[in-house]
Length: 212
Image 1 (cartoon, rainbow, N blue to C red):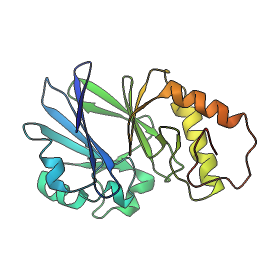
Image 2: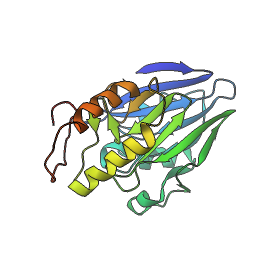
Image 3: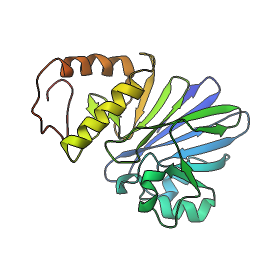
Image 4: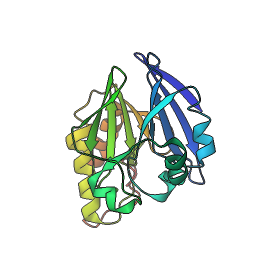
């Protein structure tokens, strides 16, 4: 468990479940309002991290099972809206209460979190941006993009990363869906090395910028 402060908000990171997916509890100390990003592991593990907070909603970066293990139980116990991109909505029952769109703003007390649609790993994958903190789901990890199922999906996730995420400042801290944090400037440099080399046209799957 890790706690970080970002100009008045608190970020609590929990690595949960068999695949150690990251759940983030982002809260506003001034109001006690909190947002849960992704729902791996068990509801009990996540609920213990929101004691004393007022959870206003849950957000899924995407709907793969390792990010949704605790979702059904959390929805039952918290009774707060679930938000996700429309391209993921058919994968969730009952349907999410809120469908998100690229560029939409989520409110967290006096703070704003921007939704960035980043398809490729999944059709409705999203990242969430607050200041210089980027919650990247499985779109971007330290050293490479999220796993893709086809060359078309790989091209799509690279486009999402380069066209949307790499426009952000180099000192943007990336909080991925698995593993440790990274800094966007590092990822830009490693991608530049990747893009300087030729690659097979059918490249996809687990790609690493410096060795693929």
